[in-house]
Image (cartoon, rainbow over the protein chains, first blue to last red):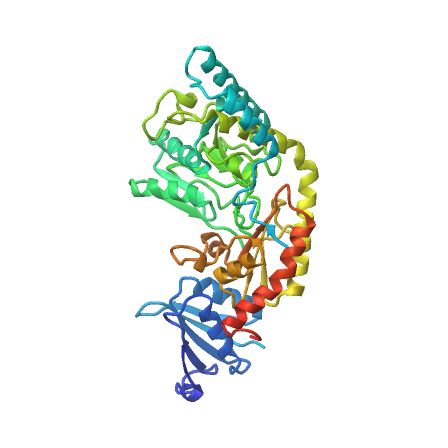
Length: 94
Length: 382
């Protein structure tokens, strides 16, 4: 896992919502590690802020959605990455 | 204390089956197709077994055939009906949460040039009867009686009625329910039903194939005169006799056993969230009917295989649909179709010998096992 810190945040002046606090790259890591990476990095996300997770484990899709449901957070977007795997954007609601 | 809680995978031989097997090995060893005394005796035993199974399922004896496994029976049911109805269409419709035996048969059909449609389920794993509507060109549809991973019962009778109106035959895979809950083919309204003896206390190697009279069916492979022309090859008469004895004995046990096992499931589901943080209970007996003996749940930040190993070390046998427990490293298609959490997944299934002590043994060990696995992944306290 590599985490790009909040230094990346707020580089897009056109963005209304708070920019992603970080991108967590869990590609190549097997279930349940991507969800653990997400949960660990989520601690630094402020309410209303988002975090981006990259994962290519086949279980990541259902498990990110389930994590959001269980932890009361919002899955904002899920899309395929050009180089393989998926990108998930998760917003902290509380 | 140890506990075997994987009775949905297979369950020990029923005492009635053990006894019948001994007798049938002695008296039913000959070829039931031969006309001499030894053959006639084997034939008599085989016919009696067929009558017993037909009686329990509410079918006619000539509607029942015995195959070598539940998988073989499901393959014959699906592909035999598709083959006979080739002129009606080339499409097989199945739910997205069918057992792999049904999905594999349907995929085989697709690889041979046919079409396949999978119908999705809700978060309980249940199909919507209105969504399970045949499109033009549907040769046969298949909907399980109950799901093997979460225990949810499907609305088979309602689906059968809609399909009948459209002239499409329905196969139901009843491997989860036959010998576990009362199953009546007439009430279900399915045209074909399959089941597996080892799931209800019969021996391994016996599948049940029921084809209702009037259902168009043609052997999808080479055929002979055995089992009404539906299952080729020499039948295992002693095992079939034992399977029928198990099913008959089970029928008498269900009324008392069902509520007892449902009580274990209820207690397990009530206590789990108190004992383990980050648990998602799957299915819901209060909102979608389930069989009494199966329940499932998933735990956040847990590797299914590591949890199975941890539980096995403590003598607890359960199964998991998590990706790390499959050869292909993909999570269970049932859990994915339900949109459920797939990591740290466990299926707990009870049987006739299960006791409250088995449940207590699981609940004693599980919280520590989950903690240990999470700690190893550095996920404690998340």
